[in-house]
Image: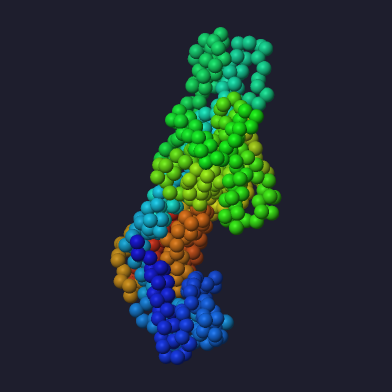
Amino acid sequence: MSNTLNTAKSQLKTAITEAFTKAIKNGELIEAEIPQFIIETPADRSNGDLATNAAMAGARVFRTAPVKIAQAITNNLELENTFFEKCEVAGPGFINFFYSKDYYASVIKDVETEGDSYGSSDFGKGKKVMVEFVSANPTGPMHMGNARGGALGDCLAAVLAKAGYNSYREFYVNDAGNQIEKFACSLEARYLQIYKDDIEFPEDGYQGGDITEHAQAYADEFGDKLVNVSSDERKKALVDYALPKNIAKMQSDMAKYKIHYDNWFFESELHNSGEVKKIVDLLTEKGLTYEKEGAIWYKNKEVCTKLLLNEGKTQDYIDKLELKDDVLIRQNGNPTYFTADIAYHKNKFDRGFETLIDIWGADHHGHVMRMKGAMDAIGCNADEFKVVLMQLVKLVSGGQVVKMSKRTGKAIQLGDLLEEVPVDSARFLFNTREANTQMDFDLDIAVQQDNQNPVYYVQYAHARICSILKALKKDGIEPRECTKDELALLDKQEERELINHIAEFSDEIIAAAKDYDPTKITRYVTQTATLFHKFYNACRVKCDDERLMQARLALCLSVKTVIKNVLDMFNIECPESM
């Protein structure tokens, strides 16, 4: 995709490098290697559209003051045939550059040409990336952490795709192990309690009302047929009945949340295929296991210490972590969740994914290092295993924390939230705060249809542009293609601020992909709406100068495209009227 901003930066880098070469050749600077320098957007655009530290970077090699180096650069700088009309030396030697009218026209032409693809890039080079998110325990309903993780993971995968990665969404279903055994015992107790008075509920059982509902539903459908069978047969029948219903509910909730996974991967597949056992065998072959008290242990402390030392961490730092070894196979012969997790992540790499991104709750912080160590131990690329840690969510209404659903009187679940809050609002709001920060999700704002609600604010900007176009059409005015000379008429501050912002869309997508942070894009599109409203209030679109009117219409259409591209990317409705 063409990108006027990056073209401008490339032109500038070439022009500065050539200016250095000329200054050396004509004796203004001594013979020396041209230094590395940066080109960036200054915080205050009144000082210039782009700035470089080239003069400061060259102070040591050229053994002269940055101001003198800056003067030598500008004396030899050729800006003809670039997107820049002038430059100025400022402060201790910064050089500021100002865009020409052709730059602004070119940005709008980019948007017109690329349309739905505007903002896309090939930055990711088609690299296969898996984003695994939510992966809630199927033994119970999904909660608020899953709501935040769902919006974050889905939108991150979308950002990665827009940045040129081959992104893939996966949900890992923990349908094996201890939690399923606990689920079975809980269901068994609730089922038997329907027919017997002396049945105690397991001390560590699942207390949720959903367990009782499943047991009662089975009894209503099949009666007491499980009362007199063996415990193993009873538990298996109840799990086979209830677990698919829970998983179906998860899939239904995710679909309602506009999240569609490429794959639902079941942990039981790893056990049935022997992949979990192979992990234990592989670690044993590498001398990284030992037996103690009837269990098989993994030398986690040894592996992680080695990994951290290779990263440059001190032994004192490592000692403070109090690393411990982990059980792989329990005394009863059953593998731990950790063992299955290693097998699962190896399976991901084996399927050809080059980078694995997991969205985890912040309470899994201690699990990150041992998983990285395990990846390294089994020969996978630990550097390509990434974890986004997500802090807790508090639901707030009227300034007070809300813990119970008005409808059910129970702890709020994802399904409850989506009944109370518009899906688009939830998806957008959960992506307005970085994952590593705690979040207050304001239920009052989420249901409001005004500018207090960020998604409404952005959607309204899009609808406003559609309204402008409709009103002009009634007057017989239709947008037409503008020449670059006509687009150059957009020279007011509000117009240029807006165009500069539009030009940064692709770079914002890339930055969000690099940082695994889709909140950069919600901030970007919110600012797009703000700058559009500012432009609209300062510059009349319908005016006597037909050429200027058409240029402003072209700018409106560019903003409309950018907003639509963001909302489409995040699977959020983009209304034409509100």
